[in-house]
Amino acid sequence: MAKEKEIAISGIQASGNLHIGNYIGAIKQFVELQDQYDMYAFVADLHAITVPQEPDKLRKNTLDAVYLYLACGLDSAKTTIFVQSHVPTHTELGWILNTLTPMGELERMTQFKEKSNKEGSLAGLFNYPTLMAADILLYGPDVVPVGEDQIQHIELTRTLARKFNSRFGETFKEPKDLVQKEGARIMGLDDPAKKMSKSAASKNNYIGILDSEDEIRQKIKIAVTDSGKEIKYDPATKPAVSNLLVIMSQMSNEPLKDLEEKFAGKNYGEFKNMLADILVQKLSPIRKKYNELANEPESVLKILQKGAKKALGKSEATMKIVRQKIGLLMNID
Ligand code: ATP
Ligand code: MG
Image (tube, rainbow, N blue to C red):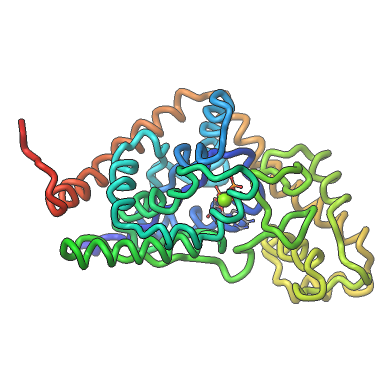
């Protein structure tokens, strides 16, 4: 009998325009993994509302993220693509995990500290990591491909799996985070000390995957650089230029070393022009595909129906075991 494929799962929040950090740190990996793994990719709408969202915009962002998954190369025949809120086992297990999670564990989460400063502290934002642990543990994955900022949440996921297992008996597998060697933390174009984010205050923080050619060129033109004029990879002394080099390397598949050689003696202007060209070239076909998909939403809704059904089937099997183990009254019909 053929060996069963290992499982991979990950998600992206429906919290705004997906950017090249999301592409490089997350989606690119999903696309590579889907041939080898039983891959699940969802759009986290329930995570997005941990900071205030406009309802109509949330709906649009959710669908846009699905179109972008497909436009970037996820194949619904290989990857189970679904929307988090269509699969209610996520919130159910999230609640149960909350009852096992010490407040102290959540208080030290970097994402909570960073976002609560900006948005005020909502209980949902505080509990974000327990819902994320549920998103993952429901599917018994081996790996979770993410950007660097999410490693801490996956560590907590493993901690919660161990806690549950030691209290109620072996139930959950402890998943590994899968983080790229380079490109796992793309920094903001307007501030290389902070990561690029959908919810950044300024649009100049990021290149959206759907940005127009003009927007891309303009944003790269005004992207912050460092003092001196050398184009080399040295995050300690040249954080801004190093970030731009990583973006170029990830988008062109050329090693950093080769790029440093290529731009030896060249100035920032020439380097930025080339980077803008590469981004335009890489993102235009994705934008084109996105537009095609956005014009045929019915076929995408079918993909989401199929995805939700499969995700619900898989996660409900886990929940039956969980409910039984923690002592919920079952079998009343
Ligand atoms: P928000 O600002 O709303 O939190 P975000 O840009 O951080 O949005 P998420 O939806 O939180 O995006 O994260 C989706 C995936 O993209 C995660 O795997 C995350 O680690 C990855 N990711 C997010 N930002 C970056 C970045 N700057 N560089 C690399 N990976 C990133
Ligand atoms: Mg984030």
